[in-house]
Image 1: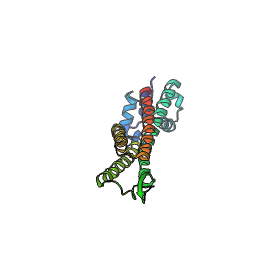
Image 2: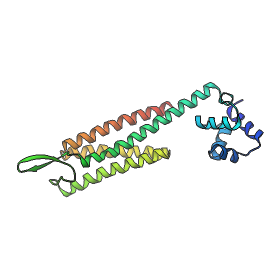
Image 3: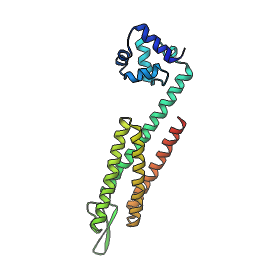
Image 4: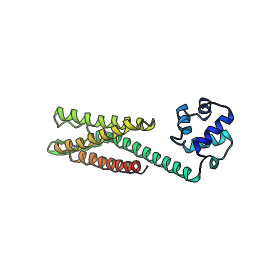
Amino acid sequence: MEFHEKLQELRKNRGITQEELAEALYVSRTAISKWESGRGYPSIDSLKEISNYFSVTIDNLLSSEKLLFIAEKENKANLRSVCDSLLGLMDICSFILIILPLYPNKVSGFVESVNLFAYTQITMLNRLLYWIMIITLIVAGITKLLLTKFGIVRCNNIMTGVSMVISVLSVLFLAMTRETYAVIVVFLLLVIKGLLVLRRNLLTKDS
């Protein structure tokens, strides 16, 4: 007997509806319906709740092969979530482009490094574009963290693409304006993000 058949049998023997079972397990009725129709399996935590609620062992609910499959799938999903969170943090790290002394100011024939607040020897347009670029990356990072927290996968993937495009454009723009130190920082962040995206895609492909 398959898991979905066992779950249906246990629920009907208890004499409860899908809604009542969903409330008891702290999940949605849609999740119960999905499990009972054989269109998916619960998480490890939900399996434990089902096991405790019906007083049966997890081994009675699922074969060891299915249990291993669920565990591996859940582990990959957690790793993808970690990659997404790190991608968001990398964008938030763009804040260092504001506070670190990465920009050259010439004073009395000498060049001193200053942060973006004190950087005055550039055009107003470039200064405005720097601020827009950095703030956009920070907002993208915060947005990505929120999307990851609430599990909104599709929008999360779109935000990843937007973030990568902004980073590439930032590298090109800073290179054109010859901001040597700033472009190095942005390029390093871009490389790290690229590695995280590659790792995440490999996890998605394997799942």
